[in-house]
Image (cartoon, rainbow, N blue to C red; front, side, top):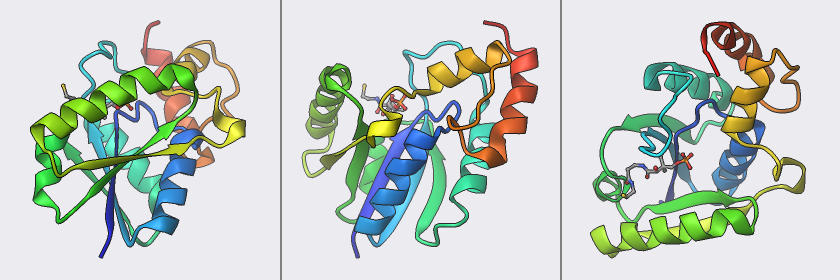
Length: 163
Ligand code: PNS
């Protein structure tokens, strides 16, 4: 059985993330979406628990996708699976440097761990969670940016969340 881990902070999940998860689920037998802390992102919009609920809602239609969370290192978390592969989306050259560094650090900690990159679908190359948070904070229409099931929740949260 092949297994992929799609890690990320998902604050919140976007249609770009969902596109990567869906395509990963077509390639691997099982996919675990792991919601994790990114220590460089210091002003979260959603708690980890809220993100888990939103991600669960939007991946419910994919039978081989499950959602977990971990507060530890990705490379350590991956050790609980048998030959897992980390799958991440790559939007543009600007993503490459960071992702390449993460891949090398993960390999140092867990040499067996492989990382694969899926190129983002062209229509989502502009999209990121930070763009969504920014747009939401200006009450912009989020249609086409995030899954429709979670738009209301993001709009509600944006009213409480300060830029
Ligand atoms: O969606 P993001 O914010 O690009 O995802 C980054 C994430 C959460 C995958 C990354 O920050 C991560 O792996 N966090 C867990 C801690 C860790 O393993 N850090 C890398 C080694 S220092």
